[in-house]
Amino acid sequence: MSWLLAFPIIIPFATAVIAFLNRDKPTGRWWSVLGSLLLLLASGALMVRVLQEGVVAAQMGQWAAPFGITLVADLLSAVMVVITAITGLAVAVYALADIDTAKEKLGYHALFQVLIAGVVGAFLTGDLFNLYVWFEVMLISSFGLLILGGSREQIDGGIKYVALNLVSTILFLSGVGLLYGMTGTLNMADLSLAVEEVENQGLLTVIAVMFMVAFGVKAAVFPLFFWLPASYHTPAFSVSAVFAGLLTKVGVYALIRMFTLVFDHDIGFTHTILLWVAGFTMVTGVLGAAAQQDFRKILSFHIVSQIGYMILGLALYTPLAIVGAVFYLVHHIVVKANLFLVAGVAQRLTGSTDLRRIGGLYKSAPFLGFLFLIPAFSLAGFPPLSGFWAKYLLVKAALDIDAWFIAFVALAVGLLTIFSMTKIWGEAFWKPHPDGVEPKLNKIDRADLWPLLLPIAGLATLTVIIGLSPEPFVQFAERASDQLLNPQAYVAAVLGGAS
Amino acid sequence: MEVMLAVLVGVLVAAAVYLMLAQNVLRFLFGLILISNAANLTIFAAGRVSTGQPPLIPEGADAPIGFVANALPQALVLTAIVIGFGLFAFALVLAFRAYEALGTLNSDEMRVAEPMEDRP
Image (cartoon, rainbow over all chains, first blue to last red; front, side):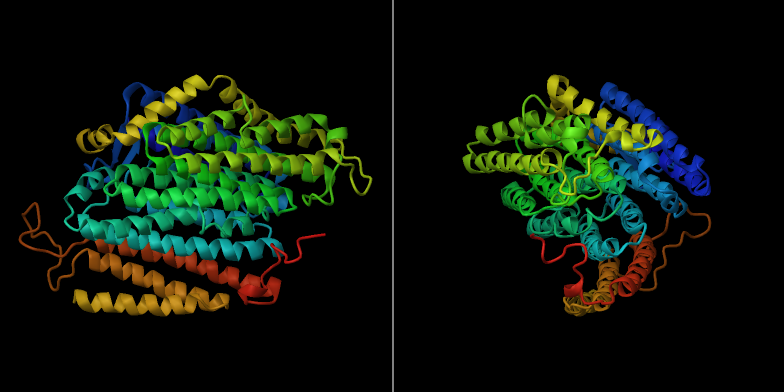
């Protein structure tokens, strides 16, 4: 039973060790693909178990909670692990063609697998201090991936990324210490009971805000997002894609987890702040994107703006809004990672990501154009793609509680998103290449072509599937939201069922 | 004792913030060391401070007898110190590489990834 929860963490770590030992050989990259495939199977098994039995918890080393280390999966954790595995597999395949042997020798695949392990660990842990440790695992491997290759842009972006993330880490750590001082426990399920008995609820709110800022930096919300557009356009494309898909979403996940399970004592205060943050994040992100002229920089700013939607779901704090946030999280990871992968192929074909210096992709590589349009329209919220349902749920949730203004902001930002996507479309795909180069898909090696296009096509298919048959996904998100807003099952699984 | 620790944490954070607001990346990193130590002391103090009561279980007993010091925050601090040490070592090397590659440690001049003139 406990193995089911431990496997998704053990598999990437084991893969990392094997990939590191084989980093000089061409087999190293295939180990990474194999490990990602196994992770997908393990996460699928975990998902089936959670769907059948509800919240699953395991105590490592048989030390009963709240003293031992708890791993716990509810529907939100399980779906995040599954989607991490899907993204991981897509990027591992893409990396077959994207990562050169020099970067492989420096240990790209090992760092990548450790990153996945950190992300999965953060989703599955039921202990606040462990969450800190998983954040660090994720952080140190992301530092490595970000500056792998060591170009000047990477070092420059890396400094900003490292500096701001370390500040957030220390804030998180201080918050953990203070919360422990007030409640005497760090087990998240135990905390959700213990915070109710704290006498000084005002101090608790202060700690809640510390956590909000710490996770806010990780999630890249306004006004704490500046590290993201400074660094995400610098590393290799597969690194950008996995960062864009997963890292900020761990911050969002942590926010959702803490502000539904533990810090729900003063919703009027904390969630009002979150609502303002959500609005400003959406608007500044999309306006920042409008000013950019680089494929990846535009996409980076759109990560920020999309994070706003997820925070909006949490901030509205109605069952439907949480459904929207969960749905949005899943949809966004798939779409965003995919767009960065498309950017990688576009750079291969045209030689740059600067929109002023490229063009002509539609004429000579219409298939790539088609593959770009699916995630791009989904991001902007065109029916019938996945983004439409995600936005629909959130706007409906806002209108249900008469939050007209934020609903208007959400819709207006969607409109501006279309503007950015059409800008990329017009510049990179429609206009002729300024140097007269004709980018052709078959210029890429046959051996490189399928690892580049297969993940893109796979993720695009997933987007279309979610878009065309949203009902099972929405029903799933409803169950997940129900578990988040009624944490009794979560608490009982952790504290009651030691196994 | 708690009061002393609280004052110490305050002083450390104040000094750290002062250093971290500087434009020089190296000064920022020194500030980071100070503030991470302040965070560690916070955890230590949050676990309640006592003197001369080691958390040892006497022979033959199953649990410690009477009041003993809280061992958990010390374990947490130890973990945090190790992690912080690793991250800081990385950050220091990164700052060195930045100085090599960019020729400056002034954060205002680090605009390679985001050039000022982004318009045609």
